Amino acid sequence: MSIPASDADDSVSAGELSARYDTFVVDLLGSIAYGELSAFERLAIDARHSPSLGDRAVLGKMAVSEFGHYEAICARLNAMGMDPELAMAPFVRMVDSFHERTRPADWHESLMKAYVVETITEEFYAAIAEHLDDATREAIAGVHTSDEQIETLTSLLKTMLAEDPRLSSRLALWGRRMVGEALTQVQRIGAKHSFLVGLRPDATQEQAAAEVQTILSALTRNHSKRMSKLGLTA
Amino acid sequence: MSIPASDADDSVSAGELSARYDTFVVDLLGSIAYGELSAFERLAIDARHSPSLGDRAVLGKMAVSEFGHYEAICARLNAMGMDPELAMAPFVRMVDSFHERTRPADWHESLMKAYVVETITEEFYAAIAEHLDDATREAIAGVHTSDEQIETLTSLLKTMLAEDPRLSSRLALWGRRMVGEALTQVQRIGAKHSFLVGLRPDATQEQAAAEVQTILSALTRNHSKRMSKLGLTA
Image (tube, rainbow over all chains, first blue to last red; front, side, top):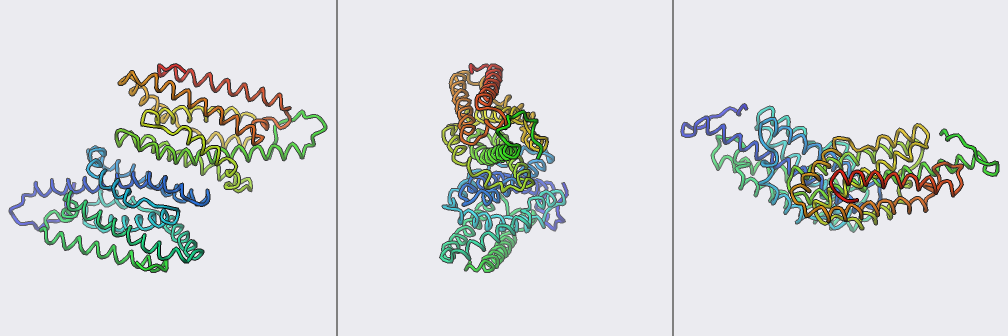
């Protein structure tokens, strides 16, 4: 596996850096794989809140594409000689608990959750992938919600908000909770699994922390822009 | 739409037969579409009982292919100029209540339910499709669980039963409940929606009832054979 150019100091051997990088990539792919598998299940479940059978299929379709992402990331882990199940295992509890804390109460919240979580997750992966080797970057690029699906979600949310203006404050609040939980999640996983600290295997803790901060700020900023487009206060 | 050759008596006009046939096909496709959509959701939910992440993906994969079937049947309904949502609507309550009554308590029951319901449903569709026009038959033939998936289910069930012999009597009982509920379901839908009575639009009530009985007997017989292969009493 190729490793991004390193300007590490001499105290860390190339072998150690390489091992650190591999662990980082396996952790990252394992967390993405489990994230996608559980997104598949949660979307399939949340779809049942839908007011109509047609709407129900919108989240169903998203669920199906999450499952495809899950399979693709597992294939990449297998190609690396890693057991996907082992790679995913460390992330099961955190991801499950995220979903427990953000269980939508109705169709409005289900749609909003799908929208916020999909867009942020994707931007997060994209930001991290920039630093990685080609094969990993390519695998992560495949985990992409189609623009068409995001468009559908956006337009459903807009219609919903236009039809019932009282929804705005509730969904704005719900959106804030989603984004707060999602970013907390990212930081927690990062802290526990050498995850974000591994962005550049040769970076110091301080450099890594600064980089993570930059990514989180960008995620928050873009989230606020999306909320504004929906007419909501982020 | 072509109609199977008719030897109806003169009291029923060709136009009336044709309308009756169309209603029958739309009812049939509507019930299949909703059956597949809800199978998708239930399998995704039941997958969460799995003991390992690998097993969880087995039901997940089946769920995904059910969603594909749902989309294919909707496409056929659209091609016929029918609204899939309207076609599905009459079957929502019955199908949902079937799933409520057969909610698996654990992973063993989830797998068994998937196996029994998939195989019986498929044989049922195949039996009915024999009587139908080419386009409908083709659409229904697409609703087919892959042999590979059935093989996987069978081998998971066999391993499970070999590892814990005490499971046999519980799963045999559960299998019987499943098949009983499934056949009751078929008869109920049939009675309410001119469903099975429409097998031959020109048949009398008695002829239709006899034909239905033949189909149900065949389904039961094949189910018993499958249970025997698993070493279970049907």
